[in-house]
Image (tube, rainbow, N blue to C red):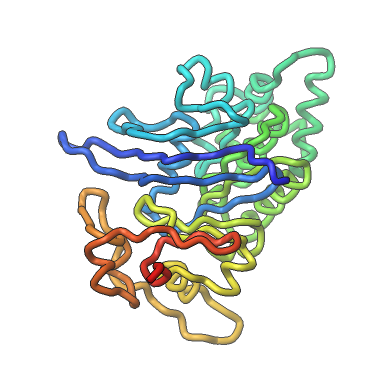
Length: 315
């Protein structure tokens, strides 16, 4: 029987902008099985990072959670106070950010920052730190420990962040586009480290706009568009037969070895302040019908596949 480490139920999040409230996350229901890499994919502005920040209670002041539950190992994170959530954040749930420099204190050495993560300090603490750095394939460990963040490359800083997750023994790791600022070779090495974490039994939620990363590194994928999860599937199934028009458009924009001409997704993603009736993707959809413009679709469910689209509605 599958065991879910995180379950999200009817989550709704929005933002106040100039005294008006605009929804950003709409009735999301998701579950994340332990020991797998789960991707949440979509264009920038779809709500992926909002979702991650909601889990960690890192939303800005103008944000409001209007409804829902986020159950981590059975406990609702949304009911915890700041002191309680701080005990979980960075310990049981770790974040690998887009820009690791923002997560490392520029005034402290790497060793001092890693020492802060160690739960029970004893005579073996330094060995624990060195072992974690070795596991993330950092060379010249002694030099890295006495360095400040600005003295390390972006890839090295990301490895330090991952080492923090190992030291804290986090069960759930949220990776928010962790390779965005890195070159291709360094990106691949960071993604391979995520596979190593999976092999150690960790659960990873990977935020990305790159479906080639999803195909090579992830087990499941949830496609997000303007705060809606429009398709959820096992990775192999989704790439073999995408259902939702948005998923098809994203895959059509991927370069292939067959020399196929790349397809463009028409139009642009709408700003949060623009209200769209019906299906939110309908202004850009190649399969749009009259019903799409007026009524939000229900989910079509079929063998590990959830699709939010009128094309699959019951007659």
